[in-house]
Length: 102
Image 1 (cartoon, rainbow, N blue to C red):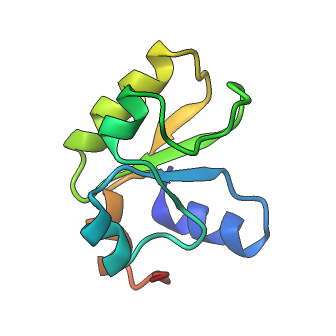
Image 2 (image 1 turned 60 degrees about the horizontal axis):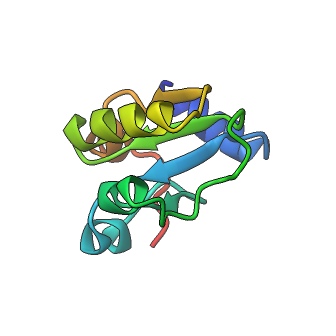
Image 3 (image 1 turned 90 degrees about the horizontal axis):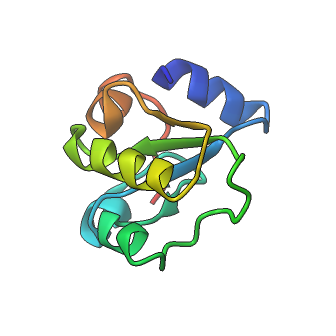
């Protein structure tokens, strides 16, 4: 999903669940508004606060992409069917000047 599209959907209160898989210090430093913090290791151990509805629309992000790719694969492996990645991840989100929540 393109950052601008996600931002528009957040503003319209029609946003998918944004799953931020970065480390705690990265998440606390700034994240997509409303994102849930679900580090990859918590997804692996099924300890992350993700929706139980496996048809829920999820957008996964990290800083640059590799962790999000792994997390997307893990989510699909456990049955989530509507998982996409945030294009350009948090680095592009910030470079685009989009709002960041702390």
